[in-house]
Length: 270
Image (cartoon, rainbow, N blue to C red; front, top):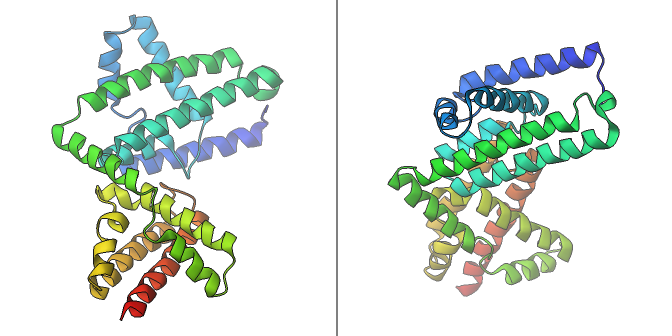
């Protein structure tokens, strides 16, 4: 929508805050900025190079989300060798730009503040960046590629939760409703897939069944304790890289219930 002076001041302050945070975190916008500019020289004319960089920066100014800054999240994904997440983030950002373009075309430049045509230029620039980004993934060092493959493989198993049905029945028997238990299962799968599988292992799939079979309570407590610590750290730091804090809290609660259930399984086997 069209903005008044106060809106522009607020936007300017948000941008300043974001730039300070990016500088503190060592974040470039765009990521691999120098390499991208060099790459553009082989793709487009000199005048187009200038335009593409300008359009990327305009898009960045327009979409200013301090809690989920795209370029910060993309850098975190690269630092974690999480190329699957990096590509997902790029697709989400492109969709966000396309949604903004559609809205600008619907309500008009005067009301929106930018024309659909201008935002279309931002989309074109970002799609060029996506092509560059995909090439960067292909050129990544072998060790990062190998770790990325491990992360992706571990996420395939994260769609299954060990003893999920028995966990649901256990919860109902202990006074919880079925919908709550299904929600717990969903939260555990999601946090496992989005956060814990970044280690390259699905601990709940690769190790937990063996710990239960061997009644290794010490290892079970150690594993769930480490998971709780990681979630607590994310919550206390308001780190919404994987999901909103409210969802992190729900996931922590769900994981705590699941840990109690797993301990009960061992107690019943004695």
